[in-house]
Length: 238
Image (tube, rainbow, N blue to C red; front, top):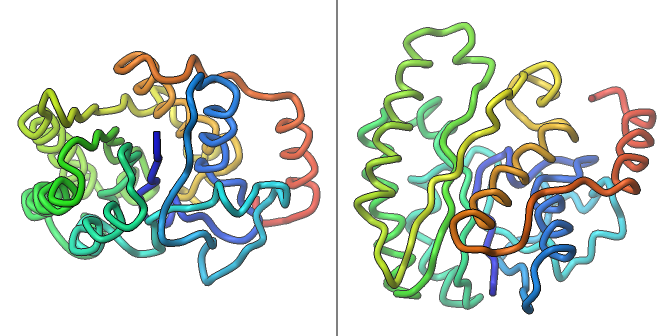
């Protein structure tokens, strides 16, 4: 299994973050019985930082296709090249908020979803993917019109996943964390805190385990809890 993480600022992370990519890598190391590799054209955090909260996160596991301010419309043109070059066969995707917030409406955004998978499948016809809907965020909490647009996009995304899924190239829609709390799970109303990173990774882990019997239930590690306490003590951002 060759895993490619795809996302926006919530996925790439910033200096001092563990990232949910790290959480997911640790989860697969513990629970996946077969060989796997994390792949992708990028390895850094926002602005090229390499300051991951866990310095032991190996470079070979940091691969991704995620960018600060990048959404479906930005990543669709290049996903085929990334999949082809890195031989990715399993995509874990968290996209949509940046599109809706700055660039496109729900219908335009889902058109880019279709474009994205056309390009990805041209490179790897039998790839599979798990997609996370747009989760609660600070703008939606105070802007009813934006909240409605996010909800509409999530409806369209669910339909797109059903329509685009094929026996040889299945797609899964992950269930967003049911009790996502902006104060606890983000550090600014959007980007995940260590607690939020766990919850995002757990959402993908549940979809993989329940949908394809990949890995197992998400369980936290005690050493991660200690690292998080140390990280919170060492920075004022969270």
